[in-house]
Image (cartoon, rainbow, N blue to C red):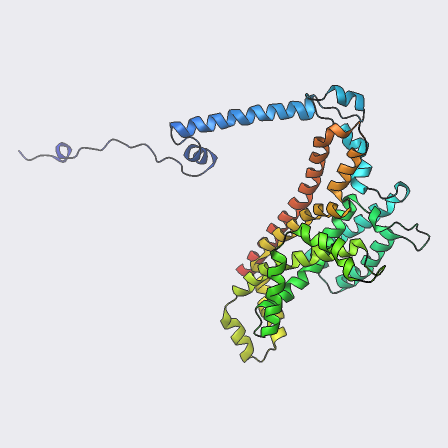
Length: 371
């Protein structure tokens, strides 16, 4: 008897559907609970994080003192934070030793500078008249800060401090360092031996020493080589030191972008009869700078944070103003941790904003290349 199809065919039992490999749950299962030891480590880390978060919540919020009452803060020491020190010393921390009656000028000048920087980062304001606005705003900024004219009381630069000094050093340091860095980067790639050697010596010399030594030289050593009473203001010397130091590091970042441009594009520009500067301005630099946007913004963030080092030359920026405010008052001196956390928050807001702007530029560049 011949076998029927039903006698030969044996159906295979259904297999379970494949597990989903995407999504949050799949990522957690693959990376955090893939085996027993990984699961134990994950649970231990979560327990440690939960414990630390509960202690931090209890110290920072539940048992914290928000009123500027030194007695309550002393009673809460060890169990709760004293945020009252921030409200008590807020004006001194933010504006430093700038005269109390004139702090509106420091606020107005800083707000004007920040608004100008924000406008310079927005595409609708990228017009030729923006250069004229910068030329007009910079003198207004220094007139407000320094005074001595238009019935404004003169405030010497050694009294400038706090957030206005931090923003001023970072903003002008970035604005002045960037064009110098571009020129130095081009000079290091130059075929002229004198220009190439000079740029290499400058970059390697500056990059071989810490910023503190540069500030020390600019503040204390540089005046020794000048005639008496002919030395520039200490703020000018410090700004020059920050600018030259930052330009050396930025120059290497820009040089990395220049090296990524194919040599054939430069040769093609030469065949079209473009001059050296036309080639750099229209072909090489636009592409090179877009390639190194993250590194450039990272350098800008470093410049902003490095302004805290000017305390060594008795210029009390944000961090120095906070230390000066608490060191001069013994009652509030034990609560420096809260003061430092307030400073950390300000630095984080500025640095985070710059990093977000860097991501926005990268998205714009990708969008333009996709067209």
